[in-house]
Image 1 (cartoon, protein in one colour):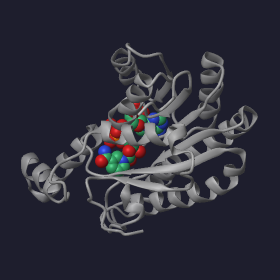
Image 2: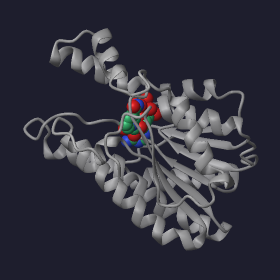
Image 3: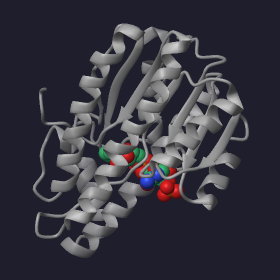
Length: 260
Ligand SMILES: NC(=O)c1ccc[n+]([C@@H]2O[C@H](COP(=O)([O-])OP(=O)(O)OC[C@H]3O[C@@H](n4cnc5c(N)ncnc54)[C@H](OP(=O)(O)O)[C@@H]3O)[C@@H](O)[C@H]2O)c1
């Protein structure tokens, strides 16, 4: 299927690793010009080397900082002239029960996952309105739909992300700006590699035991790859998904236990 993305510009936060890098690669292969950001210069340089076959530009930005987000949008527009697609992907998973997560850690997590995409949407939506439309896609972990006591901060934050996607999509749909979410689970990336190490230490399971347990819990019987998320994002970014608005799509091999 030709996604007709050639010539569009996509901005991907956290495009220097795992899922974000796969999204940048996939959109670049579809003919998009891609702008990526992250906090680490070393990761950014490595990602740009990985993306050498596509038109890509990298920026250092911490999405927790509104000034960084404003500069990121300005710099991407200065470089490519416009932004057609935004993918808010930057972030991590915050595990732990209520007695293990300090309020400050929750706030920091909320700033990354909710305030960052919020500031980005505030900056980009006026430009997309002027252009006659655009796409905003937010990557949301599944604890927002299936609350977990041992990941209470991620649960609360991800639920807020869902509320944000739905209300933002209502507001922007009349301007032909389609807002949707893609919800990964059990995707192999540096993030999930770190989580298996965490469980190895705290639950006494070996890395292999933990990885195989988590893979076996997926109905398809295996882990997914960042490219699985990237394929869904590329479709949602395309004209082919022109009537999908305010939706959240699980890409998880069937792992999600919620029917909503
Ligand atoms: N993998 C999964 O199965 C899974 C499941 C549920 C949800 N997710 C979500 O999917 C997204 C991508 O995860 P991943 O697995 O690809 O993780 P990853 O490999 O660790 O990548 C995270 C990316 O986000 C960037 N980042 C983190 N905090 C940032 C900040 N404050 N400002 C700017 N960039 C920031 C990182 O770069 P720097 O460190 O250099 O900033 C990196 O590029 C995350 O939001 C994660 O919570 C993933």
